[in-house]
Image (cartoon, rainbow over all chains, first blue to last red; front, side):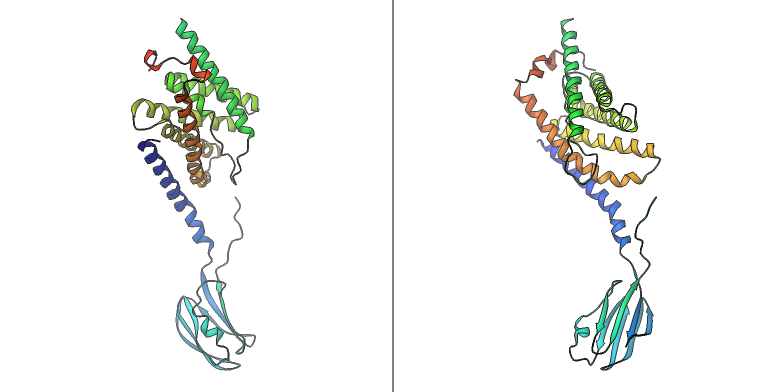
Length: 123
Length: 182
């Protein structure tokens, strides 16, 4: 292989990768559902629906005492809770559609819902 | 006259070789998740014609090869035939250009360029045929596929030209003696 060959191969390789990124990248992003709202359930009842993005701290009356839910833009976390394990606290921030924080002792569930997803597109 | 006979025989052999490779190649499935990728060994015949004769002869060899292979394969004048013709013509033109006007490429580079343009031409023809631009999503796959296949074919040709003992090359004229070059 001469130098010219190698340069040609490299150029075509870069071109292919560039094309792939430009053409397929869009699909990868589109396929991820956008988080639109968070649904907060306490003891089986939906007590609050938070449209995202939003900001603030919400106080929930869970089974194991009051819990504070913090919403910062697209992210949500349990900021304060009095449940024994503290699993909900340790989970940290969630932000993607489909993610949830569930506090079993407090019977609190926060679920992020996304925009309706397409299963498939036919032409 | 003797020269013309040699040329006729050599080009005919190339057409026969190209046709055989084209047909056999169509039967070998390359284990890839995408359809339509093949080695492009038939391009060897076109490249040899280009190397020893001129662009016109190479185009003749390519066209005859595609026509014969399509007759054998049963896709003469079908959409697939159109794609094959476009690809073969495009690749022959670019390879002639590089072979005549540049010095920095070996047969590998020329073969890679030919494979790339072959695939691009096919893609263009397919999108015109289907009246749809959606097929452009196949572009990265085809570009990427052109690299290994082009390198393989070019490497084969490089060693074929260096070996000097091939039966085919016994028929080939020396390039210096060939004043038919356009």
